[in-house]
Amino acid sequence: MKKVVVIGGGTGQSAILRGLKKIEGIALTTIVTVADDGGSTGRLRRQFHIPAMGDIRHVMCALAESESMLKSLMNFRFSGESDIGGHNLGNLILTALAQESGSFMNAIEQCCKVLNIKGQILPSTEQVITLYAMMQDGTIVRGESNIPKFKNRVERVFYEEDVVANEKAVQAILEADYIIYGIGSLYTSILPNLIIEGIAKALKQSEAKKIYICNAMSQSGETDYYSLEDHVQAIIDHTFPEAIDIVVAHNNIISPQILARYELMGSFPILVKEQNHDYRLLYCDMLSFENQLIRHDSEKIKEMLEQLLKEDENVLHK
Image 1 (cartoon, rainbow, N blue to C red):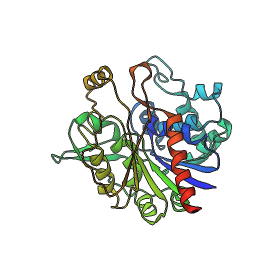
Image 2: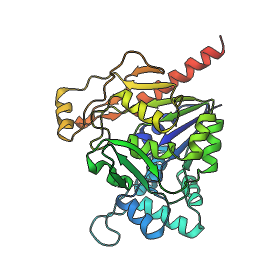
Image 3: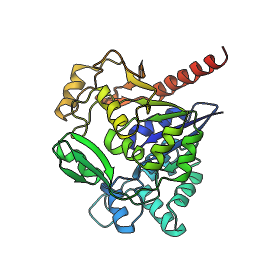
Image 4: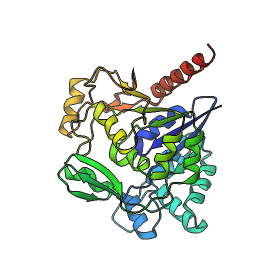
């Protein structure tokens, strides 16, 4: 059985996992950032001093065995401006379980059992961490949620404190046959995991095939006017030169109407600017455009990853 590890956070990672969980014959682990400090997640981590749980919850719902009422409730958000207003029920449940058991990891494991999760969900660290960014003009920005607000090119992201990697996450990386980065915010979902020293060392030691699924559109305030090569270089600059073996990019045609809509939000297509690369560049049909929104299609991602697995199997049996 092939071991697949997905590293990231946010809704992009969930799109990959919804596809991967349908592939037979793989053992799936997802490593998730806990650096988020905005919204309901940020309020709870400040009040109860626990790691950010919002991305963990997203991943749980993506890996739940079936569409259930409980899964819907995990994503339910309370309205209003009272103490509970704006909070997500799943975040509150994870917080309560962490308080009750005294362990954030125990809270995750208990929720996973109730939702009948396919695979293993691991925070990249169990510490309460704060992400910083140094901008190109030397400005230091504190907090993941503040980074996109500065509308400045990010030079690097980092932690001021020593961050200890989750040992289970390190072990999963070392045992993996495939490691997938993305899809998601480059500086606030993917790199917050990779810059943790224990994670970075494990990735360097790992003999797994490392795959980066690139975003379709830039993120305003974070990757403005970035090319595909800029995304890859940012990962390499924060980790090591051999961090990526395969880069997957979409080959879909996006209509001018949709592009114009995204341009109003400061988001532009991520283009390939060079012909020769030190990694394999793979183009795939990966996108859907329902309701004029650009989304990575879980079923198409599943088919693409299945094809990559089959390619390796064929090579082994030649």
